[in-house]
Image (tube, rainbow, N blue to C red; front, side, top):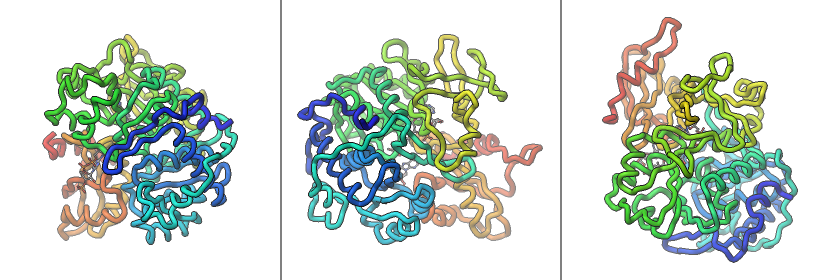
Amino acid sequence: MNHLFDGLLEGRDGAQRFAEIPGESARHYSYADVLAVSARFANVLVAHGVKPGDRVAAQVPKSIEAVMLYLAVVRAGAVFLPLNTAYTASEVEYFLTDATPAIFIGDPLKEDVLGQVAQRAGAAMMTMGVWTKPEVNAGSFLEEGLSAETEFRSVPRAGDDLAAILYTSGTTGRSKGAMLSHGNLLSNAKTLADYWRFTPEDVLIHALPIFHTHGLFVAINITLVAGGSLIFLPHFDAEEILSNMPNASALMGVPTFYTRLLDHEGLTKDASAHMRLFVSGSAPLLADTHDAWRERTGHAILERYGMTETSMNTSNPYDGERRAGTVGYPLPGVDVRVTDEAGTALGAGEIGAIEVRGPNVFSGYWQMPEKTAEEMRADGFFITGDVGVFSDDGYLSIVGRSKDLVISGGYNVYPKEVELLIDALPGVQESAVIGVPHPDFGEGVVAVVVPSGVDLIEEGAVIGALSDCLARYKQPKRVFVVDELPRNAMGKVQKAALRERFGTVFGG
Ligand code: MLC
Ligand code: AMP
């Protein structure tokens, strides 16, 4: 028994649809295809020497085959390591060196540079290929998949075996690999599918990237475990989403999805009449957005709260009040508490650190036992770094973060990582990176830089210098030069003062 794969696909009817992939070469994917293609891919992995417990890293464009790669890795008993397609080669090098995967499946356009990166990390590099374009697939993973057997006996794995490592940036600037087990992922998928009432009739519009928890585990695992189907879109496009709503029942998105859809005149009660559920997460949904959505469509967006290390922790109720500005109740089986600095649980109305415990909570950071220990309490609670408060009737609100983190369009940016790179630039004495209100991304990244000498520091030069080493979404959208950074009596940079000073640069 392979805990996650068998758990997700138990009792599926092969003839049933798993995905519709609209577009130029529109096609359908049945559950029988899921079984056959994931088997083919698992056979390819094994033929390349992948053994249980090996890591398989992938930085590949969104495709249904990339989803099958995830399932194949799980079936082969290996550990899936998806990487944001926006990461630069130097970012990828860190992940490969840290996780030492057996195979890295990457972008053919960057094969030269990534091939060297993979080689230095001791991984074999393959390219993914495009299923619908066999003519461009020479030597690719897909080409091998096309001729592989459609049967594969899934490698037995237990609930506490690793299924995936997802990197999440750290406050020190170094990313940490969150180790997620078969049990973590399956338990959360089952809980959510049940809580949000997913059934085989559901059709989820999938427009999220598939290298993060939200698009990969929440959206896809829920659909699989419920036996539902996806309308699988390559990326967010308001027009596309609206045109698919009449054939769909649910949408999952980050708040930017909802603000962009609200900006579209096509969003009406009629356009969304066939939908039963809109879920938002990964970043705070403004109460204004919640209210405007309800007004325009008649639907109350269901906001939930999670993170890479824990998958989903809390959710507004399916029935009952979906309260704007809150992330709802702890999910069944998940303990959530708000604590003071000593770790003592606080009562309703008192603000403190959000801690969670449950079958969803990860087993630790890859090869960083000291970091894991710093964030885990002896009684099994994980300290999330989020700050919150429970209402008298049990709704959790997130009121801030104790971790220095910017969330831009649902992507996390850790200021320290950006500051270290800016500080290393010639002419820079020091810098502070902050997030300030941004009308589209919720928060936008801003760098405040102190020069070391008299030379002029140009905004464009700073951003340009980062472009080779930092994914685009992490790069500051604005850079300001100041004589000195505000500090408190302890010498700590007062980021709150900077956020105040530069708070309106995006018109926020
Ligand atoms: C794109 N850009 C961003 C950005 N996305 N900049 C900052 N933040 C972002 N999130 C850059 C582009 O490179 C481009 O730069 C410019 O901004 C405009 O791009 P765009 O074409 O308008 O953006 P788009 O491609 O439409 O992407 C926006 C988006 C996307 C919101 C659709 O970022 C997205 O899909 N976000 C979802 C992230 C997500 O899945 N998070 C879940 C994490 S899991 P230029 O200058 O080159 O033009 C998690 C746990 C949980 O957090 O609870 O779920
Ligand atoms: P990540 O590390 O990418 O998984 O991001 C997780 C972080 O996103 C959490 O620790 C929160 O800070 C934030 N987050 C997720 N969902 C919500 C939400 N609904 N409201 C506010 N913040 C959220």
